[in-house]
Length: 143
Image (cartoon, rainbow, N blue to C red; front, top):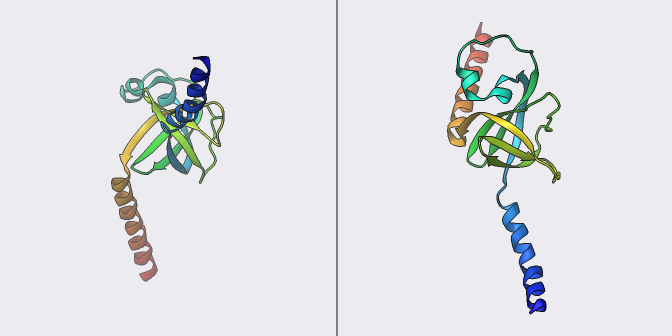
């Protein structure tokens, strides 16, 4: 009986690991800039609840992460939460945050979700902005 249990455990271990890995989605970081940390520290209600007492002016990294179906704008909790640009990362939604794992790291970094948009809509907006820039460049060149 013990041998059957051990064989079952050894045979099922890869399946369990595959199930754990499959919870991650893949995405590419395409943009980063330093922004306000208030959303990362205090959440939605403070960010949209109107003016409040002045707090320390920390700056936190804000990333645009493009996945297959959704584009996320995420904010780190501190200035040292850095992700390389053009890096494909593994991420998963955890409660109201995005848990990110870079380069098979053993731990996840948590990021607040500032914005989410369906990728097809985001691409449409990007094309519209590119068209406006091109039209403005063409107009400036004609002068």
